[in-house]
Length: 284
Ligand code: HEC
Ligand code: HEC
Image (cartoon, rainbow, N blue to C red; front, side, top):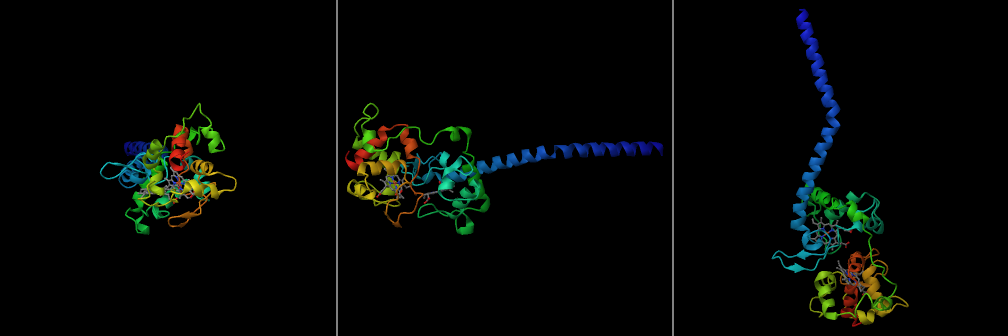
């Protein structure tokens, strides 16, 4: 009798200790579980991105290197996603520009689910797209995971671009006279202008942005007091400042512009690119 009670009490205390211990450990266990689950989701999202998104948004999401199914490099049609303007800050610059009041995660998820504009497809089954809800969440987690201290510490534009194209081209210690042959290459591939604006021989028409075939004359009429070269220069650096009147599918949308906002940052790494692009578009 006595022994039974002692054994019973000990058993009870042991149970309570084990119970209490696991109760104490529960938050840590849950957190580990959540991290592991998020990790798996990001990994699955990476595969979805490589198979469905990289052709337009670039292999690393910077919209700098895009390839077709045969592995040939093509111009990127999508906006940069691995980009501080989109991912850094809550709200980020891009969310503010778009007048988005929800969270960043909801911004990415909604755009992916429903698509946007004439080129970005609808992805969620809910809207007739090919991906399940959990797959949309996975690829959203993958995109959000590009936010990092390094990405967000980098200033958006590193080069100190002067006001006008003339002032820029006068910096002869930094830039040589523009080379139109190199400019044509940058236009077609490196910066993918061609994917949206069409080829410079006029054979492939513009898809998303205005045709630039007459920009040398049209450019001078867009903004009072701005010459064509400065207008083009300014359009590349700050697409949302002035919205062109006519796009291939009707009046151009914006501001914000559907043209990527990271060319100023990218060309800042090598300002000669700007001189060469101006040369091919304007003969400057
Ligand atoms: C056929 C080309 C194409 C494909 C494929 C594509 N996108 Fe896009 N995406 C675009 C374009 C173009 C835009 C800009 C739309 C606009 O604002 O008019 C865009 C915009 C976005 C945006 C919003 C970016 C911003 O700054 O507002 C996100 C997020 C996005 N895409 C994610 C994805 C994901 C994830 C996939 C794959 C599941 C994908 N896209 C596949 C072309 C594409
Ligand atoms: C993802 C598509 C896209 C890419 C890539 C793109 N643009 Fe644009 N661009 C647009 C759209 C849309 C507009 C019209 C809205 C606006 O004015 O911002 C535009 C407007 C312009 C304009 C003003 C045109 C006018 O008729 O007033 C110029 C100049 C221009 N882009 C040059 C470039 C150059 C140069 C590049 C490459 C370095 C480039 N764009 C890359 C979509 C794009």
